[in-house]
Amino acid sequence: MALADHVVVMNHGRIEDQGPPERVYGTPATRFTATFMGESTIVEGRVDDSGRVKTPLGTFKAEGCPPNTAIHVAVRPEHVALGPGIDAIVKDVVYQGSFKRVTAALVAAPEIALLARLPVNAPVKADARLSLAIDPEHVILLKD
Image 1 (cartoon, rainbow, N blue to C red):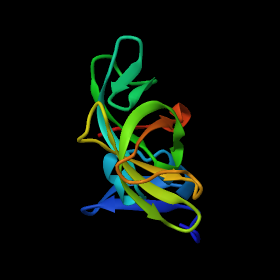
Image 2 (image 1 turned 90 degrees about the vertical axis):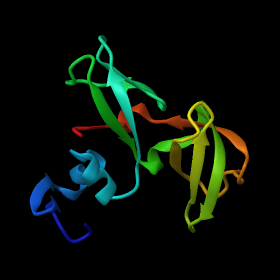
Image 3 (image 1 turned 135 degrees about the vertical axis):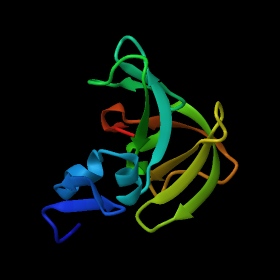
Image 4 (image 1 turned 30 degrees about the vertical axis):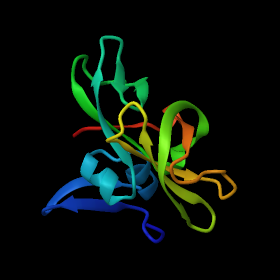
């Protein structure tokens, strides 16, 4: 991506997504692209009558999505921070130089592993309980 001004993501010989690297990474069109272009926590949700999608990670705007439909949302680890919001239990912490890669299970939905990229000085340890916040402006709505 560092050398390209346009990327094309293919899946079984079919173009899945294409555009500038920043757009394809930041707002991938599909689940395949979201996972191919980096890590994400992807969960299913349902759009309500007010145009919001309810997920185990919270409720977010779902502009352009018809009511009463199931969709997937993705959250990149860099858009998760320490702060009030989602109660979770730390399952894994990996020091990666400029940040800590944290995997945490949601208390309300332990089967969901939320990935976070936290500062190196964040006081997180395996099995600790903490609260994580998601930047709602960076929640990605996926077509499939």
